[in-house]
Image (spheres, rainbow, N blue to C red):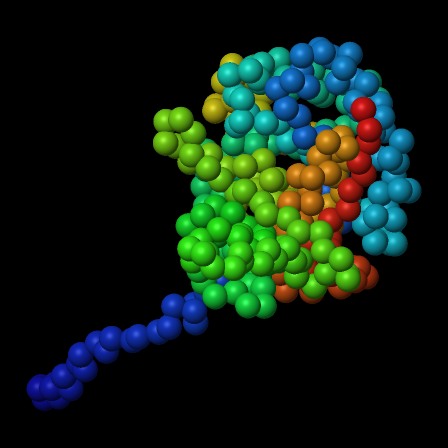
Length: 333
């Protein structure tokens, strides 16, 4: 027998270096055409019992008719997808909030009494840093403040101070040299104002008496809008995971409730191309702050582009700026 020819030596494995961005991916999320918020509930909203809740939904009900929602969605075809949701504040005054075993059934019953269906109920604390993902810090890191003309870096950044504005802050008159002429006061100025300014300086967070960081209602409401628009990602991954619970056996603690509870088996997707929020008029300043914040968030470009592309495929011309995808109804008490 002839000896087998010797096999050529194997070449050593070569290390391959690749830019991290070359392998980035952004998970897509299912979209409804419109996300309808039926309310943002504080602990005091539950003090009046089921009757007070029913009255609140009664005032909203006429504005939740299918024809109105179709016009808001911008979708003119068959198969309109609308999901409804609401936010419960279990964050700012959690000790005053009744248990989920009481609140969730009361909300569902009050809505049903007015022919409304609540598809999703979310915890506000999950928009902060007490959910599956610490969402508020993620969105804060994505802030890209819009500098005003003449900004010189003398003020701390938003990430240091926790304050974000929509223009140039007023210049104080203190600190001038002794015996010198008084410094001239300069008013604040809104960026891109229409002749006259509407200047707003928004507090995003502060520290409580125990030194713990607490996020403001305005900032959490901005996170909430981004979630509903399906534009929040962490390392490209989706952070919206609605969960079904046993409505007959709800926990007594809000910390044991999923971030977003799916309460309807036929619900359209939680995220949507556009959002519509029906709120009490007391929320006007909060939502003004939300719009200022959203105008300065650097949204994941892949998520943003994907939503525009998919909406266009359904005949919807979607605005490039997230803040322009939001509509409101404010009702007096």
